[in-house]
Length: 464
Image 1 (cartoon, helix red, strand yellow):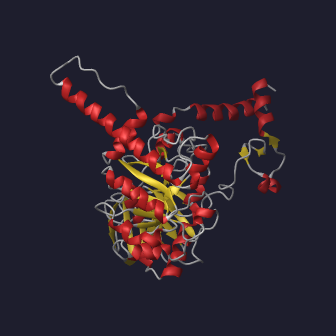
Image 2 (cartoon, rainbow, N blue to C red):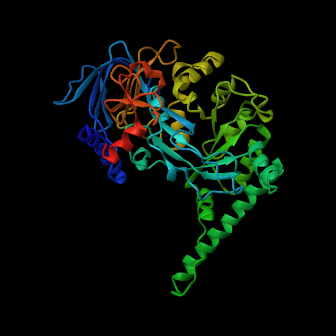
Image 3 (cartoon, rainbow, N blue to C red):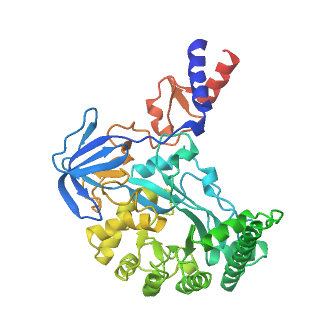
């Protein structure tokens, strides 16, 4: 008995000890046949095949032959859409509201990614393959965010990063920063006016910092003893915002504050931003569309409002009004629970605004991809793009449709038929085990002669 217990425990310890940094993202080869393909950007294709090679969509057509050794997925009667992109999520991270200063651009949620978060799998069960995981909204200028792929099953934090995705950062307007800093810590901003002051002061400091760096670079050409300015990581990031290397993603609700931030950004030459939530975006849709060279993006809720005073006023027609005015609009979750049925949220916007199927699906695919600067890789079914695909048993905008399979770069990460029934249950380390299999109270009736995991480990280490 000791030998059997020790061998199981030793295997667990060895697996945990494997070097996380050595893990590389897996890609797959597969042929999906006879599907109704919802490309989003090029219409709907009936009885169509998709050939995936090395994680990339290689060919789209009919009656394609499967190369030797390639698995085939029969999608007869099924719908295939691009993997859903959530432009505002907080999964695979925790405790990421660095509320110690109204400006904390130096911190990054990418440093604390958690590939073990069960929310990744639950999101896959809703067809979501990419999430933009964000810093909290306590700060006027918060921390940097991270775009991740839902490569459920990897163990290295870096393995869920989306390689090459543009850098982004979280801003926040309104009640959150004024409550946390003004009323909470008696430091600016205490008012909505104070929020603008913090923004302008931070950008002005970043400008002077960059000017000092540029001056040093010029002086160094002729004077090898030139002294560089002291390094400041916060100002480095702010300077990158001003140069366009970091995309601003701003928590916002009220139209007046959204207009204020657009004025500030224009004054400092920043031409790219996506406003998050934007509950009063419908009031200023033309102004959003006219911002910068490509317009300001709007990533919204389909029907959430009135949960605090500054969100008192909104409409379920927000997405349609913004879309009809030429604003690149997406629907996000801001919630691990909502994250897994964003296709329902898109359907709500179709119901209340009369959007076409492609327009509604674009709210959760190509449009958020554009807002994150990753539309060259995800957001539509096109040759050359990542094979991030969600397979439904009906049209995904139907309330009766259910996701059946989700692929990330050609690898099946969710399969409703093949995955164990308890995959989406939270693992409880205090729960009993049966022959090494963990389960929760929901599966208590499946336990036969189970033991407590903690006691199991202790007895094995003690040599019992």
